[in-house]
Length: 589
Image 1 (cartoon, rainbow, N blue to C red):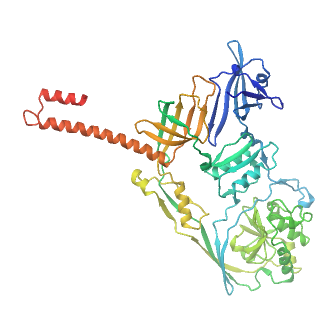
Image 2: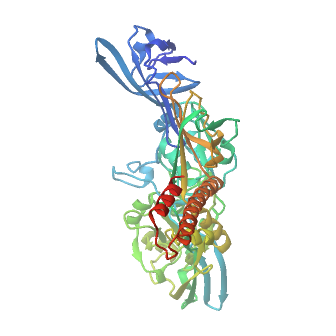
Image 3: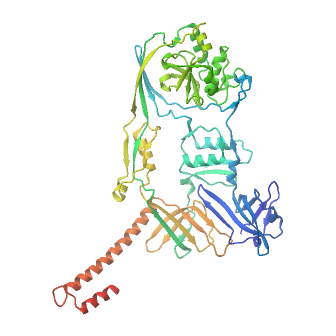
């Protein structure tokens, strides 16, 4: 049997705790997939170094894994001294890893602020793909993809998430990915801790299993996690109880699907000199802004403006601030602070050098720069570069004009008239909303609708159909809890062959949780096993067999009643005493 080892907080010695000092019935390990991994025990004072090192935040080692003591409760009873210990697996210490937003000190003169307030840095909104632009005289028709305009949503791989939180950590955490995972759309990673990392993995990759080896965070695809180790659980052979819970609470077999939309905007110019883009001043601003085309988006880069090399990377606000700086205009490189450096104008007044803000006033999170009344230039989001787009492609929430920039654009005099235009727009779905139904399930159980799915990621109906099918639960769930006769050591993910006689159940189920008492003579291992579609069909087949047997028995009794009735001595259907006794005996037999 493995020894229990103890290392005190901020100590290097590792000492064994005598098994004789442990209450064997209190010593157990509980594990539930993606939820819990915990060790508990009661130890009596044996005067050893190990016992005296047991305290909050000390480490205990068992079966090759480290646990951190979170509760150590001294207990004085019946003339003895003991400690009740609860320890969690060391991987939970990832909660101590923290990531922080980059904060800008606005008292720094290079920031362009004179106040001592510290504000949150700007966040970026992600934009979609411009599908098409056609021009007809002074009329521009733009098809704008609305599906990807979700604020702060970015596509991440599983490795991106792990690297963001774990790279360079000082607690010794590493990671492994076992199996294949696609990318998922997640709110931009900016701050949080290791617990947030684990939650994001489970939420956005439902087929992921987090099963660490001490401080090595291993993430498995469930198909790679579940393996057959040749174990078997037979009712009344090596188990005392098989508890099967058949639950239709979460049954769903149909869902209404709504995919992405796009808008078609028709904009007609009423001024051929729209946007004040033809003057020498405007052309100078346009040329200056365009020299940064291709510079990669890097969050927090480009500061302090005027000192940092802009070609190493910029984010949305440092880019706009840099263009202004190039013309001797100092404005801060933070969207909320930039709001006070202009006055609001209407959409049809927009001209070269105007600033387009995204979000609500006082909490803007993204910014672009107008090249003219129809075109903007901006740093979009991580993974992209500075580029130009039609304004209608990703229209700002509101526009502002800085009078100093307006004078430069006008060549020495402010001109707020700008170019005028009229526009109309209409929204269309890439495909008509539709129902996805599992007809086999509906025929068996009736209609059980899932809440409507509206997902702007999908431009293709078939892709959304496959996704929707994966969200349905067309069969009731089946959970199995098994109590063993033995101290059989559970193996997480072990696909155990389970057998209940008389055809009740014969199938393979994987271990997804357990309570393991390796030292107790009275408490035995309890396994929680998963189920899949085939397991449920096996269970349903056994239920049908039992039902058929019951109907068969009723049928036999009905035949017996009919025979007695048809053979009465009176011939008129009335039973005499002898016939009644005969029927009674047939029921008992």
